[in-house]
Amino acid sequence: MQSACPALILCEPQNGALKVVALTLLDRLVVACHRAGCPSIHIVCPAPLPSLQRARALNIPIEITTIMPALAGLTLVAECRLIVQAADVKAVMARQGRLLDEKGAPMPLGVVSNLLEDLDRTLSLLPPVPAEGVAVSVSDVATAQCAEEALWNSLVSSSDGVVDRYFNRPLGRYLSKILIHTPVTPNQVTVVSMLAGVAGAYYFALGNYTAGIIGALLLQLSALIDCVDGDIARIAFKESALGKWLDIALDQVVHVAVFAGIAIGLSRQGSSAPVLWLGISAVAGALISFPVVVRARLLANKQTDTRLERFIDAASTRDFTVLVLLLAVVGKLHWFLWLTGITVHVFWITALLLQLPKSKVRSPA
Image (cartoon, rainbow, N blue to C red; front, top):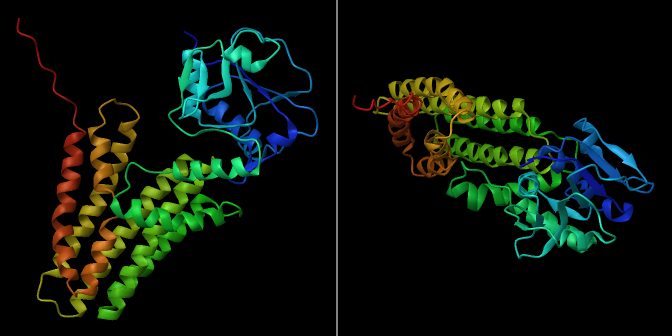
């Protein structure tokens, strides 16, 4: 069965120009079709053509005409009054059906070999394909706002912990909704998150109670901002390999700086715990963990066993930032060093073991 086919987008300029999270409906649909694997994208639209800012930035090849072309075999046909995600476009092509939204309502997108006089009638003959992601028909400003909320609410990460889910993301989303309308890039947000974390490490290292509280608050701010870069990247189609690895690398910079800062600060306070040794252990474990995590992320694209990915996601939550803040308030930051100095080594050893190739069981002769 054919898994990808050319896309034909029918665009009514006024509708296609409606914006959802800073991009026009037409722009979002073009990018979704491209990411779903459509080998070519043809737009039928009378002038003027709505903005294709992101599609142009991604160098997506597009053919534009004012006249309906003849279909050459199976074609993905869609009206531009639609918000849909690439995974659902791909599913529609694989099953050669028509998209339905989460409530079962038919959407103006499906795979056809010829068009009848009415597109809806043509699509009604196709097998239904329920959407798993956001699928919304947009006809005016009110429905565009509903589509925006649906897109924002869909932005979650497999590594989100309790604090991310109920604090960092909801609060960080206010910042995301502002930055999405500015030239600020996700990578710039990642760098700002790192700077906030390193500033927190500096305050930890000062070695007094008030500075420890400030350091913990800055670390929490860093975690909150760290949720924003991913939100902006995904909702504006600005994901990149550089951004992915930059996020992983700068997270480790923050971890190393914070572990070292807490150890130095507690040592200055004259803590009776072996804080310097615990700090060295935590920093060493973080440095060892980095190449282990990088290798794991690379392996995740090559193997179907998701245990390793699930383990790293579960261990990579930002929930520890709240623990640091609580321990700073009660003056027990050395407890955090004990915990981290030991568990960080459990983490990288377990992650490394999960990367070992599975032994093949030989069948008896």
